[in-house]
Amino acid sequence: MKLLPLIALAVACGPALASDRIDDSWHTSAELGAISTSGNTAGTSVSGKIDARQELDDWSNQYIVAGHFKEDEVNDSEGKRSSTRSAERYSLSAKAAYKLVKDNEKLFVLAAHVGDKFGAYSSYTTMAVGRSTRWYSSPAASVDVEIGPGYFSGERATGEPESGFTVRGAAAMRWQVSQSAQFSQVLSVERGTSNIHSIAEAALSTKINGTMQMKAAFSARNDTNVPADKKNTDTQTSLTLVYSF
Image (cartoon, rainbow, N blue to C red):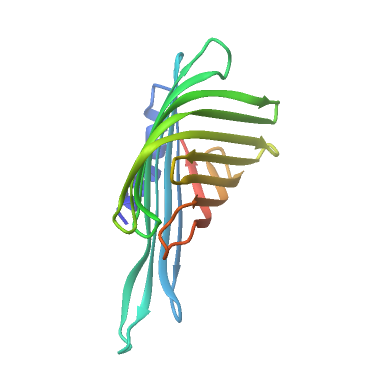
């Protein structure tokens, strides 16, 4: 669980960073969720994410680090209990967007990498460029869409390498349900010659205080072309504590 110490450090150091920071162009959130069971069923599950956004006069940048790990304790044929890793996924992404003259119009460059020990792709790296625009805007809600060409390189769970050009489209919707609650929905789709890779997440966040939130989320990852022993869709339901600074 290499990500856990980093997330714990970010949460612990958050107040100090917030008070000492002079550059207010950065807006960062760190979230952590963990489940531990014992008795007849024993195991540990940890999910974490760090989302750092920077707003400058001409640029809007975003950096995300996320991970999910799960270990189960099982009994072998002799009755001895041992720990078995049943989920291990991490992701890194960076996006730089140049602001155009018209409000909420941007040109972006995106790079992302996913490592998934138990997924249809054990590794998946993608790069994309394109244009984003605000398709809908109101005082309580907004919808941003982006589209552009890209390139991906990955390795299937079978060990076979795969790469090629893609067309990427994405949309992000945010709705301020009330003063203390926000609903968000994000979707991205990459269409290549042999596979369509898509990621979707729906989340509801509620404020606990000025810097703390509770977030309930459901996410799904789908690949249309997978090895015979793998399912097309992986889903995850999570409840995490989010600290913003």
